[in-house]
Length: 273
Image (cartoon, rainbow, N blue to C red; front, side):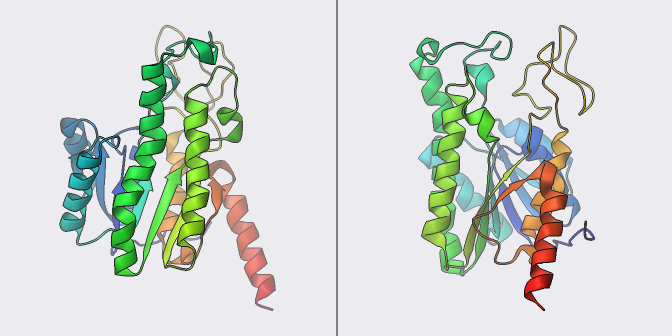
């Protein structure tokens, strides 16, 4: 791995940044010197989280609501003087429609329509609405980077994972189309995913006593091994750095990021000969 990039000039908006993967990425970007605006549906939680990070600002945002998205993007743009990097991360999981989805999966026909809509509106429509608001501003500025957080393909296709699986599959298709639409414009789009289930609020706690204590722990008899969310730090910082200039339409897996980076360096070296 290369030395940690220095991102003091970088301006970042990250949705769902008060916990889980979002907090891990916001923390890594702030530690590297970036100016970060993070969002949460709770204004108190957003502000409290931001106070724990150097130079960060917390704003309340409902990614499902166009007016909320417009207001927050306006506020973030004004606060930062622009947005160089958008991290689309806000999402909700299977627990909202089936709290026992790992131990007692249910068929898609048992999912309440309002639960289906809530997950899709957050995980897919939310990505669209925020990117739709930010992209014209980036195009006018002549540059910008968008990173959409994704999940393993196995999660998208797993039995009992309606509506979470379809919402993430849709967001991945959206990312590919966004990248195609923006090719050659100076605004890049990439995807980033952990590479496995992570220790976040989306996964039920291990057993009756509470959450797993390490990335190697398993969840309550399911055999599901969990990753620490901090695994997202190095790849998101790299994607924000000068080294990632021109990187476009890539799907980076955090667990495989060091190997991906080595292969990229080797390929670049061969091309330079």
